[in-house]
Image 1 (cartoon, rainbow, N blue to C red):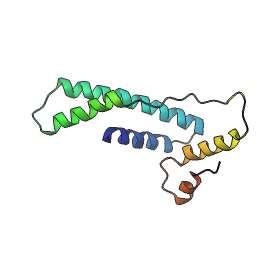
Image 2: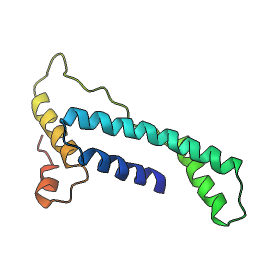
Image 3: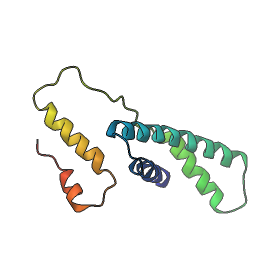
Image 4: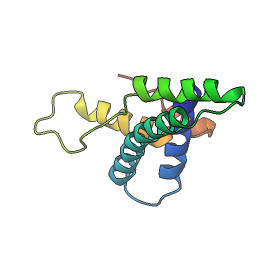
Length: 117
């Protein structure tokens, strides 16, 4: 679905261009995803209320209305775990590497996405 892919791209661009902590970037990313849901809903309502004779209007309306209904933003609570089990440190480091590599086209960074368990 095109709108959802566009949202991921826009939200990643918004986060990657900011100099801040990883936790701050992730919070900004999740906030962007929630705003995308609201955007899909608003576009669906707007396109439904203002019909047009242009041939693309019904297709565009259907695309945004489907996105408004089906898209579920990722919402996460970021913080330290109370107790860490064996292997949690490696998993946490892997998850941070994956989050940092999102959207990167650098081959070295892409290789780091694969973490050995």
